[in-house]
Amino acid sequence: MTSSGHARAGAAAANVEGEESIRRNAGFAFVVNMSGAVFTAALTLFLVRALGPEGYGLYALALSITALLVLPSDFGISTAAARFVAERRGDRTAVAAIVRDALRLKVVIALSVSTTLFLASGPVARAYGEPSLDWPLRAMALVLLAQSLLQLIGGTFAAHGRMIANLKIGLSASAVELGTVVPIVLLGGAAAGAAFGRAAGWGVALAVGIVELARFHGRAAFGLGRRSSGTTRRIAGYAGALLIVEAAYALFDQIGTILIGGYIGAAAVGVFQAPLRLVALLHLPALAVATAVAPRLARHERLEPNVPAFQFALRWLIVLQSATIAPLIVWAEPIVNLLLGSEYEESVNVLRAMTPYIFLTGIAPLVSLAANYLGRARLRIPFALTALVVCVAIDVVLIPRIGVIGAAVGSVAGFAVYVLGHLGICRSALGLPLAPVAATVGRSLLAAAVAAAALAAFGVHELAVWEWFAGATLASAAFVGTLLATREISRSDLGDVLRTVRRALGATMRGA
Image 1 (cartoon, rainbow, N blue to C red):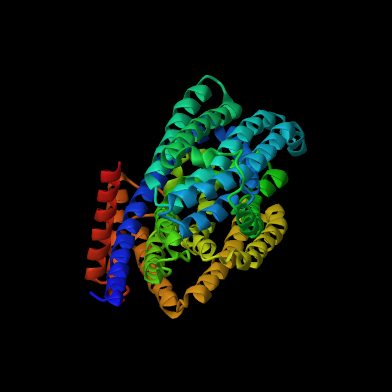
Image 2: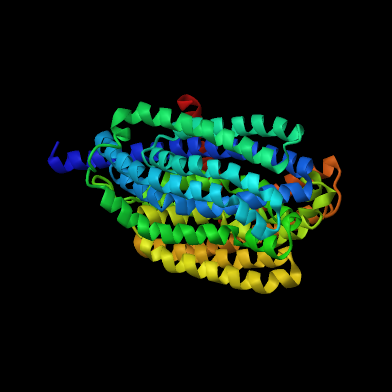
């Protein structure tokens, strides 16, 4: 065989291996995300009822304040390191050196930020006029430290295709948190007890993460006293742009909650946050796909960016997220009443108003991670900052006038700017045609409208058990049938997706 023939054969083998790796990692990522979300949903259902709107509002406010600091405490280091790991995947020595240099930076920054939050918890609680907020914030400072370090550890495993390690980390965090929070709250621990239970879960997860890191890289990843391998400056340089983007996004993601707490109070925070935490399950497939596909867009020395995988993923994520629109709008009241109870009646309108935001959460992980791995972090800055400005401007005007719905309007408008801007970055970097994307959106929204009519036929207020099942079955058939009729999907497409899911699940079970 000629040298060119060998090269073509090697490239073909690499592509097959890449496709199998994407399926396997998508399967692991989905299990990681789903297991965490199931535990989170169960814990949220318990807390909203056990603590009530006031107590859960304090807990949610502490979560939101801490979430503002997660990404600044990371300083963009985890995402930057993941990009360079993806470019060196397969070379354990080089990857260990990147992890070591990133960890050196990370420990100092994360410890500083979490200590500051711990010491400032009292003044922050007094500023909100909520004295009981201080101890939840102190517990969340411990959570912040563990989460920040695990961002780096988990990110490097994802970039290197080691999602099984992230599965172990995620399961340990969720199981310990649930098993700790429930008895503490039942014994009267209130919001502070729930926060310390969360700290216990993330502390155990950090220990598991350190063990997994040591197994994969050995002592090379922990040589904090060694001289830099030369990647520290590159990591820090790319992290600088990511810090701006991720800090802006963190503020954008929590600004509605923060302003609701300031303008209205903790109970309103609970009304706004409770339904959003429950529907977090809906974007888990998007997170799994993005985690598997985006690293394949990095400029690897042997492989070009896998553009077909990106196009395939984007199309199906749009279709999948469109399937959530009808139930969130038409059946918002039955869903809230079933899951949250009558105390959260105001959450019905929140859920409806946030439906476009929830739809966009299915696209955001793919386009934002893709931009990171393509080395386009600096191009993300204008869109992240513009989204934040739009959100804050709308929130400040509308929250005092129409309450929590004002925050929903601000979130939707700002997030639309964010997602469309990142889609533009990917279009430019990958030569992605947008006309097929727009066509997929149009056909998927039509299918969602037909599904909504099917759900409405069974009622929009109270539903019997048979109506839940019959309505869901008819709406699903209407949604898929419309997509088939408009030729957005074909029977062979459905077969391909089912085979991909089976392979991913099979790889996950074999790996586990």
